[in-house]
Image (tube, rainbow, N blue to C red; front, side):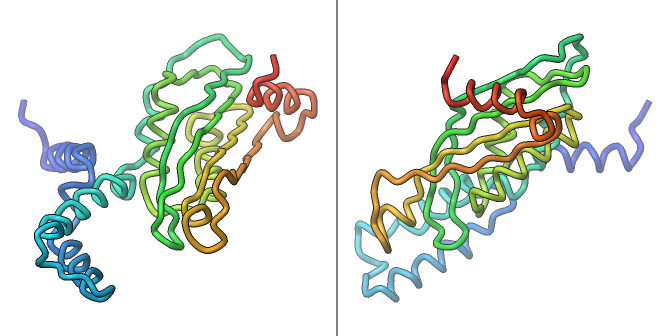
Length: 210
């Protein structure tokens, strides 16, 4: 039986989305912009060492901003029905993102805890959600809230705690130049917000205190 036109369109759309940003990013436009920036700062874009730089930067941006073309909710679709209603915690999920104010990277670790409401997520999916949310121009505060909101609303978790710790190069290599500084943000939802002892438990485990 042949597929309907809508089914084929949906399949094509899904395939293109999963292919990542490399098919939708305008590489030529980025390359032209990079050449202009090099010339504007006093460099020669035709110098041997810089000839391939615009193309490299275009490929880098396609990778760094791939989250603009990836819906993180698709990673939450594969959940499993389980009679488990205690804490699930994954610590130290490495991530890197791009500060939208200076287009400089910030990188660190995400710690995610949730209490399921009959549905548990494969652990690798948590890392994929972090990846999809981080690979775009971001601010850490918003990124923290977005991850927590996804788990609360799309997974249906009874409680969610998300903590991000990151070093921001816009603060360590320019401006105030304070290497070693760390930004910590948190988003607390559901029972973790309402119940003091539950919140204390998850934060203690996130902080590595067993």
